[in-house]
Image 1: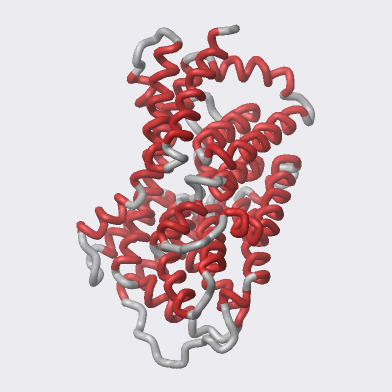
Image 2: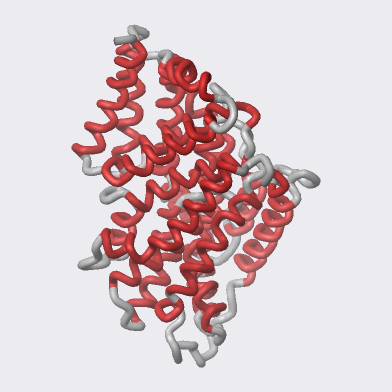
Length: 426
């Protein structure tokens, strides 16, 4: 057996054993990704290579800064009471489909900002879930709606963590910049969001539930920050080819800075908001270490050797689709880390010429892995955070199946026809 195969087996064995022992608990995933990176380095006879283990996360640093600033911005919107007042306004909308759509977008807001579905569940999902409980909605339906809102929020621009992970696979050391994903992510996610909303309108906007009483005004400073930062991100995202002032990191930083002066905003509130994103960011950084060690020890070289003969015609596409499929199958049992790793390798054959449309399609495998996981995924997180009882994974997945299948179909189209669809890249 070649040494590289043995190294890969050691790295995956450590990670898989860790996932099994901890029952896919997300807080332990980063620990075992790091241990697997160290084990790979040792198995290669290189000792503990601190340089590569530390260097790997730098491929995600720019995107992680945007996610961190967005987490503070979104967390301050929650802690200043803006999200709560915004939900009250949404519930007064009379048009049922519009109200249902706005509820879904409301749940997804933190996910859109940060790329982290968990932050949607923790904040807007919690607020929407409490309202649904008060309306007598069953726990199972609450779980499905919050899961869907959080997932679609994660897949919508400006930040999409699965796409950020996939973009890292375009280079052997440094990632392709996370630019040009705004429109592809919209085209990918919006049809699925609309389909889910239409299928669940009775739950999201029951008849006769529009609140008649007057609600308090939205807090002024958070409202200004929300509108200005949202508009800036939208304009820059849609017109990236013509306008680039500093990207999402700058806007979210300015928004968070402004919210520090709002009622309920403080340095402590900002710190609490950042801590909400620590575990996902740790997972992202240790995934970088895992990828870097795989490159250093020759595992990625063996992969290149096996795939280079397939990088002509439609065979490259086949490699990408096969790795996506493997990742989705493994996600049922092993949650996100291994599918996320496979997604970076799925992008690797197209290298620095990576088309964001194709990368967006590939990233869906990492996004769906978070939903499909029996343990340690979005289902577990939603049921636990919202304290929902007697909620079944199978029932929740079944209720989400049509929109998820539609997303998968669009993803495959993106992978197959990414080059002709490059007009979506702004």
